[in-house]
Image (cartoon, rainbow, N blue to C red):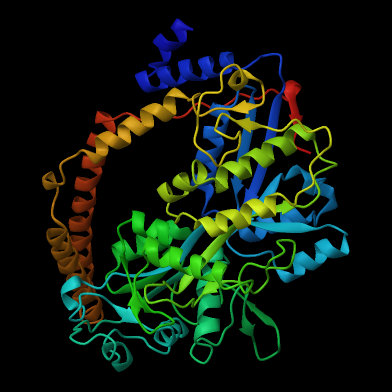
Length: 530
């Protein structure tokens, strides 16, 4: 072991991680087989799921191996329904749960019904699709924001409106001086973000956006469905990261991204006109207001029976002065009948879903990862939905070291009882989780005055944007000169980026991050998962 350290120059963080893994393995009862639970689906809540799973593994006395494959809502739904290719030998029972930012599609829901299978939707988080821009701040209107209604937004993405000084945009933004071409970005293929964005346009401005929503953009002249990706205009980008990068590098651009990602990246949101006629940017309150209003208004969005179809139910254009208009619910898809599944996997699934929807455990993690906490009314709806699931008769349920042994009340010390095999306790923690929180607190204490001000950064971005625009406008006049200019601009931007990278490296060295331990699973000791 020590020879390995000597010859492989093991770093201190790696060494500490190794010790943490060993300690975690020894802490579990080696005589107990590892319980496996695997989910798959939408990418947006992946960090929320991964963190909650690691917390649950650390809370457990018995060994658990919990995983989530972030593959997109559509793939998550397909794996929930069942296999297309029999040669793969996939069984839908291999997926403990699915997840999506959209309800189960009508076709998939009907396929389940035809197979005599019942599924239900469990809301687990509230998010939004933000629309962001990169117009220099000094070229915006008098109120310092970019205001757009749904029709104008739809016409930009239809390619009907192509410049920022179009009269339909200027009318909504008095004092705006931006006079550039609009650089449009869209996702390269289907995604829940594209579904939410296009369904909102279809529902709110069908005469301005005419290509439909969800997985189809209307039909061509031969009646064939146009898949997402056949956009009338714009640059195709891969994932939320690709969209963010485009906005950061290209001035005068527009892109739609999930709110949490865009907010974390420090992007500038467009104020969209809501149902009450107010221009609003996405905020936690404006997003939560949509869910609160919807749950109190009856079953237009969330059916009274969670086993009903949710197709066509959404939170777009909900009433309210501050309500943001493109709000989405993230769901966990559950089978109503788990009686024929491995009992230990079923128990882990039930406990995990309870943790995710709990205001004491999962919802704070959701907020840390770009979502908005569900209002209490929606938490109660999700608890009622989970109560409709039939579990195996021989399932040994997990309990929590709390006041009432559920995930929904305050933690307490339950002497002796808390040491029983099926008790999950927040008093058990992994050192990696503790140290990571210490690092985050240290980063929050860094004096912001040591960094460039936002005004200074905005001024630098504006200068870069103006130079880029000037180069683009003169591109045909002198190709060689334009090439040299672009090279010079590229070097300048590169210097700026390397300066930021140097700061990031310095912070990283100052606060080394230790990964949370995971459970090493041997095939010989695995149970569950089917």
